[in-house]
Image 1 (cartoon, rainbow, N blue to C red):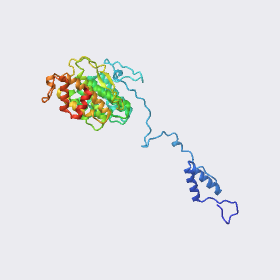
Image 2: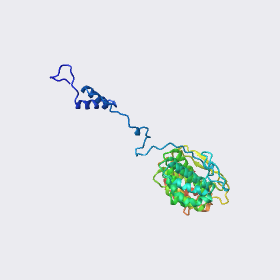
Image 3: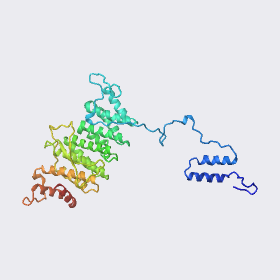
Image 4: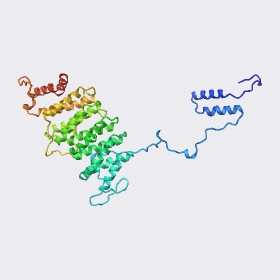
Length: 403
């Protein structure tokens, strides 16, 4: 800046306004040291000694671990190993009191009473790795000490439900595996807890998770739940009633998982008398998608510890149950979502097979006229039943699927 009363070629110091404009221009161009550069230039122009304003932080602020926006330190990474039911090992001392040593950390196994106390304490912890450890301990106790584990089931079930609601996927998967193992061990006696603590609802909801490994585990748990409860007539009928409610949920993935469990339960009953150790289920991808035009049918074997030839095989489906399930399957067959339609398709196939095993005299509705001359009697009875229970459009879709 030139002035009339200054000799030619002599620069005057910049004003504060000019310094601010220069600093703003440097910031717009991406220079991080705009303030330092402008301040240094101003000091040099004024003949002052420039000072370094970017002093190092005090020693107490150096090497401080990063913190989350909430102010809490970042969690440390932890690896979780998910063991199947067959891979579980005992976690308590031998009955003789002989102390065994863990292979991983060298610690001795606790007694049975200590293991019970540790289970509830760990599951109630606020540290997610402790919750995972507590769920795995509950699984081991249920497998190797089922009778002794019964007293802690009541206080452990609410903690298990809390784990199923966790936002952390690792906790959800471990809790799903624990729920499936409890159903495998205690079978129909666990059904009241599934209803009172909303475990069934949370298990079905886990099948609509956004994590693939959680979805797969939840769907396997629903199938194992159906296999375990199927031999008990009362528990199986009660489970079907609960699943009918979830089959009407507004979330299509929840509806699909509910029908998937109904399919597994009905298929187990339908194949019980045939001596087949596996059931045919329509396979769905982990994300719930499937190819409607080319449905993949897989054979899902029963759990290895399941009784192959039970003394009291699962009861077959009755005609009233077939009618109720036919209404559910028919409504899902015309659903807008592929995953719901694929689950309903497998259920309807099982219902059709179960209907064919019912004596013809009890198959036909009272007002149905069966023309044995023109069509097969069983096929005509199935057609009449579909048209009695379902609307015309839905009945035609069901008949097209099953015939």
